[in-house]
Image (tube, rainbow, N blue to C red; front, side):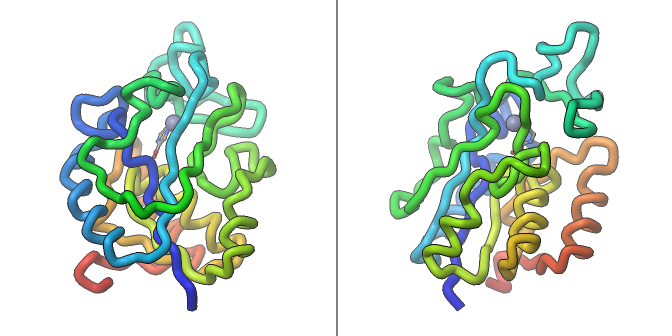
Length: 203
Ligand code: VGL
Ligand code: ZN
């Protein structure tokens, strides 16, 4: 079966020192590079928000980061401002070395809709076009790595199953934010969706 590696949000703001730092985010850069070298086909995703994005706590006076609000489409976790379009924080990690990546897919660019998933935005209906792209190119299996395990990786993995792909998440090529039990919940949702959780050594 033709397979593609999707590398999720390996951006400065998710590394230590960044606006929404993921613990150990820097440690997975070399692992992701090694993993990517084994794949002929690689897609990179890039979280890409306009200033004053709905997911930013700063857009909601009186609210703080990591609180949850009720958006028009359902619950939305509020984050520090991160991955603002065109900023250094939104740029790929300097150590990321995947020159052969074939597509960079940006997501979260609509002011009023977040998008953890690389396939479908948080309103549950707005598609990014990735499923169509991967299908047209004949891929049957999607392998995922990157940041963060419990948000963009997990949502992308579950959606990839929903759109009919075989899915493997390389857990040690990912790191989690883990707020309010989000990692345990994400692993449960991935298991229930039929996502295979693997280690780099098993790849
Ligand atoms: C992400 C929270 C907000 C991620 C993106 O890449 O997992 N998490 N935006
Ligand atoms: Zn984001």
